[in-house]
Length: 125
Image (cartoon, rainbow, N blue to C red; front, top):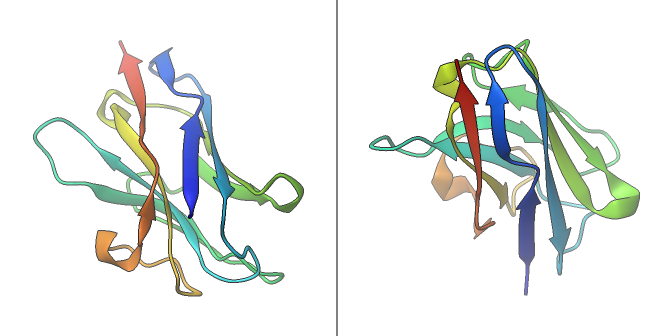
């Protein structure tokens, strides 16, 4: 049974930084991508960032966060991190960690078959 547990959300002022963490268990970490999505009230869940889960890894970002967010992984801890800098009001959302059975981190929710419970990120002015 794959389990994903996010942590690190909370309240931050615009322009500030926050780091989210996703601890994964119950899967083979030598294959399969990981991703971060977010969902704001009244909006659909959208792709934020993704990373391949292999010795040679690639990262992908949505245009809205490119240059501000960084996804990385800690293999020893089976953890995926999302460093968020220069946060904006529009970054406010519930952020979800997701695991994919595919090598590449797709940008559709259907590319992922396991999800965490989500963590709230609120950016204030």
